Length: 120
Image 1 (tube, one colour):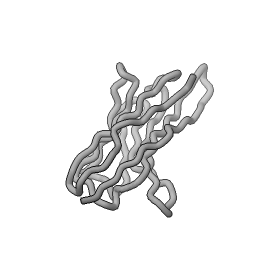
Image 2 (cartoon, rainbow, N blue to C red):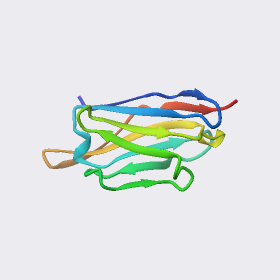
Image 3 (cartoon, helix red, strand yellow):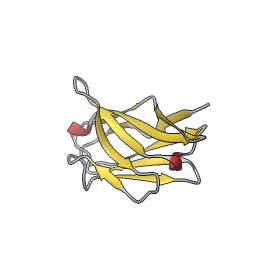
Image 4 (cartoon, one colour):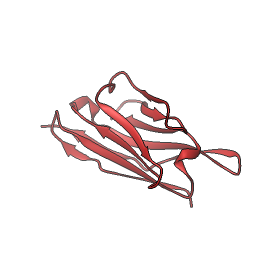
């Protein structure tokens, strides 16, 4: 069964840090690109960070550049989003998205989302 399970969210004060994890089962992350998105109340879902299948390319939204880092542990089949110097405007539900291939056919799957709240 293909599944993404996110963890690591919660409440943090401005300036603090959190690390989100996204564990995959039923497929291999390294077979495709992986992304983190977020959706704040009343706003559209936006791309936060992405990583190519070969771990050689990463992209970030301008609003998080220099503060967030996407990484992947292929042995654990887990993707991470390290978030630092968090701001109240980073408050959102964060989603992990995976593009992967099985027997040559491309698929896309999403995690269930996890809440991150930045507030004093």
